[in-house]
Length: 365
Ligand code: AMP
Ligand code: MG
Image 1 (cartoon, rainbow, N blue to C red):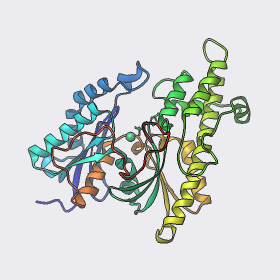
Image 2: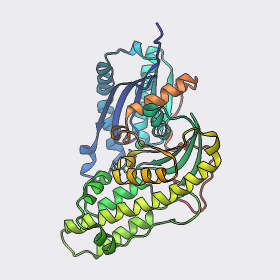
Image 3: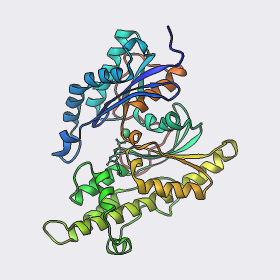
Image 4: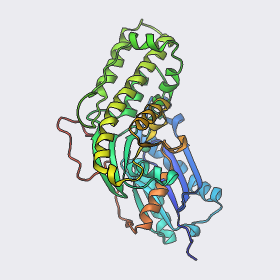
């Protein structure tokens, strides 16, 4: 018998989390398992693609079984299987896709190949039923973009980084400060130890790339270089932890300023384009860096001042997870946007197919 509410399994393996979840059409997360590979990659100070792919292989079956057990379901209760099909580390993406396709083929279920970025972008609809169109700040380890979500599979990219992604800038700056992997959350923890914020900002002046310029693009490589220069000027030997707390604090405040400036432009553009026809104009922040409390705070203040709603996913749904993949599966299943089993894994997969490459920008632009 057909379920009255669709139920989809979501599989995520695009980076260093193996994740499987089962989600119901009404937004209920029936199970949600995430196995982080932090231990496997720690010694290398970052994610090693080959190690990641092998770890996904080792654990994917157990997680699929675990997700079914937690939800007290069997494959026959599912209405579809969704798996991240890109963008991401190709070896890992292939592991998750093969698992998803195998389930779909053997149980005669529809298969949905999910764009990982779309999964971050649509999490706001899973948790809060946000209606299209809405404004998105997507900040992750590989991407930093400002987008408008007009519908499922319909995005306008208004801004992107012309060099490093914000998560990458957090991670590399953290590494320069001698903080352990994963850098972003450890840098945030370190910043919280800063004893004298005013003094920290005077001691470690940092650039605010592109601040004050038109548009919604980002640049972070200069900020990272400035961190390197400050660290190199610190006394040789073991880094003083008070200095690092001050530097981490200055870094985070600077990132906040850049984000507010860029999002301010995006909000003006959004309100003038969609304001009249949108009931509750909303800014959604998503991606791993959306877990950062300072970033959430500055965005909340900014949206309040602009009469916009603000939405950040619950912490557990900021980092990579299977629930967001299952949710895109549900959105696409409802619209009959299904894939055949010959869909290929894609290392790059822009959300806005019409977005032009930024002149002078790097590979991500
Ligand atoms: P994702 O690419 O979406 O999986 O997100 C991972 C990225 O988010 C990594 O670069 C992390 O360092 C970063 N990240 C996670 N938590 C935080 C945080 N609390 N503050 C800053 N960056 C973070
Ligand atoms: Mg991600």
